[in-house]
Amino acid sequence: MNKQRKFPENYILLPVSKTRVNPQDTPKVAKFFTQLQSSSEAPTALSLNVRKRPAQPSDEITVTVLDSIDTEGAKLISISNEELASFRFSYPGIRIIPEKFYNPAIASREIIKIHLTEPQALSTVTLRILDQQQQGIPDVTAVFFSDYSASRGASGVTDASGTVVLKLSSNVAERIYLYPGHSYWGQFKTDVALSSEMSFTLEPIAAGYQDALRFFYQTSAWQPLPRKIKIGIIDTGIGPHKDLSVLGGKNLVRGENENDYTDDEGHGTHVAGIIAAAGELKGVAEGADIMSYRVFAKGQGASNFDIIKAIDQAIKDNCDLINMSLGEAQDDEAISSYIKEAYNAGILCFAASGNDNRGPVSFPAAYSLALAVSAMGRKGTFPENSVQAGSVQEPYGTDPANFIADFSNQGIETDLTAPGVGIISTYPGDHYAVMDGTSMSCPAATGMAARILSGSEEILNLPRNQIRADEMVKYLAIYTKLLGFGANFEGKGMLYTNDELHSET
Image (cartoon, rainbow, N blue to C red; front, side, top):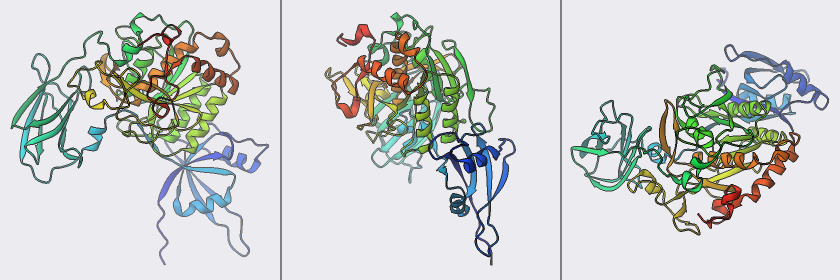
């Protein structure tokens, strides 16, 4: 009789109540954790024996240890599903949490939504995307919908000459989205008659343009923070960029060089610029010390194990705030445990509420000890035909020019709102880019929290424990302003500095 084939899966191991074992409380589990050894280059296989049953030989369980956080900390293991039940009964004092993966909380839903081939091509369009000098722009993602509700259409990326060929089953594009990588505003058009050759000219990002972030926060006039605040940015890495100074960091992606925490995706650099850019473009917390914790391998999601490694590293590095512009739909016991660990170390974690078109608040923002940030925008802070024009949706605020972005999630877990539509920030290679999402509103809130807290030496000098975190939250509550969206959309409102708190916007 052939044995059933065993397919290994990855799991995170944690003690029952904490993130590290206590030998006095659970000696058997502590011994197990401390005996496990791992190497990302050559994972170690470990065999464990379950208790012997009467007149039965002991069962053997094979576990491959892939990674670990210190000797007493969390482990990432590989074990077959068939052996998982035996493992649970062998070591009942261990939490076993599936490895899962997170995405950056950027609102690029049209790009993600359409990767379809039209069943029958009626129109072939040779499309050119041009700059103001009528030169082709490479690396622009063009998304043409023949039927938006059915997700039917075609998409492609322009080549070095700014050209891409698309085939659609209609002579009319119901919607067109153009997403440049950097340096230009995207475009949004509806009900466009198709022809064999078409071209669109993109508007460059003008220096000094007042986007939504700079409408609410006059960053160009602000002085650097009066006191240093250390902010851990858990993302795709940061920079290099001339407007950003990175204090340090670590690449937590398993198997990668831990000293390479730069950014080859762009998302983390954009997030960092919103917080701490200094120079041609200023962030809301210029002068903050930023730490880059890279958890995304290029083009891939971030493992929850790499994310908890990053939170653990931020705790060790004595960060004051952590920014997590990432999300996933389901709860995650591993990340909850480490956010709690950070809170108990006097650190606040800010998280993006997610971009699921008004869906429920995503995780980790939905966790009660994280501060969940929704995305709002303001009419007139982006070009009329830009992609951002498609994000305008009610509810509108007390000022009807303000709105909650159509992509922003909602729910009772929402703590704050911040600008997240059409945000200009830094991009690798000394470029600037426009991005949308709760990924952008989250660092706006994190940066404002840093600016506000930097004025309270008394709170920052408290011992690094839960009381410190409690006092930080209570202090931030003083500097909030409701914008009229309702609690499910804005929570406590938007953070402001003291001078702006009572002014009209």
